[in-house]
Length: 220
Image (tube, rainbow, N blue to C red):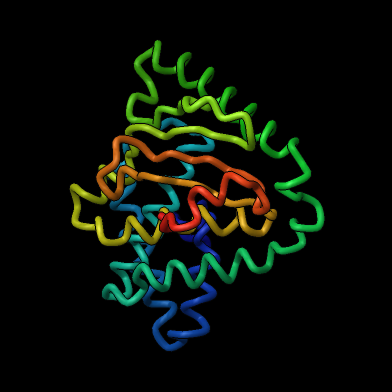
């Protein structure tokens, strides 16, 4: 059966975890999660449009749907576990992409966000996509890696308004995993989830001298 939450990149990850760890309850959890997901989409989906950024909201609704469907057993620690396991299977990317030697991935990310910003401006001029993230590309003037800020996070807003704030730090922490596979590191000093003005991202190679300055920085 194809569940409504199947559009999320987390769908199969949660299903696999449930089948392995809660086999006798898995089918019931899937059914309940689907019901929660449909309700979140109907009641709480902000005006994000259909784009790569909106997909983050589908992931968030899937995470909290399984959280509710499992009576809160599929919590933040489980989220980290399933994301880490899925990222481990992507280690082959490290043979293709090296954040210390390859600059093209950073350029690809930048072009992707430039394209998103252009599309967002066009839609917002028509009164659409009004609740989406604002993306500022390299506001800190970095000359290494790729830097951007996300402002006005609808996930953080939803979590804080509906009692899911405790899950936010776990979701944010998963941003570090894929970077590490590609011999890169995410330097982040603040998130809206933790009360910051924005979520700042700066990706550099894992051998970058810049990391020394942030060696005691918590992975948030």
